[in-house]
Image (tube, rainbow, N blue to C red):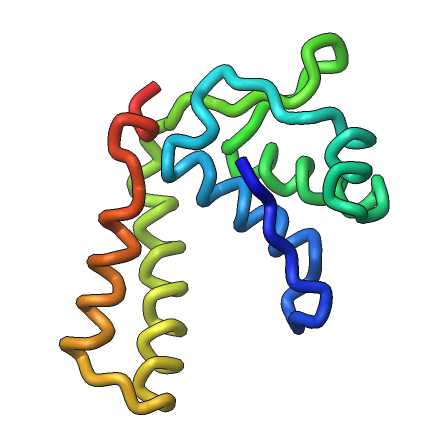
Length: 129
């Protein structure tokens, strides 16, 4: 999986890294049980501070995307059924994205087509544990 970070972005690096890993899991590039690089290795590979990667991994752990074991390191978790939690989060994030799209002149049809395209890029097999 290739990590793409924008140093000039207003989005913090740890958030960008978190988002890239979540999208990698969603696309099937990272599979349940697969190991992530160590914090040091990831930091070296992408050219960031180890504290940035550590923060990202801790967030991913709290969100249930990865498990961290001192012996095995960070591994991708199997998808869990957290329907109520994800429903609320999706509603909040989609509300914000919808507002931004409206403010930038997107029509409903354009917005829904873009959502559909992005959803179609995800690998439903990757989402099965």
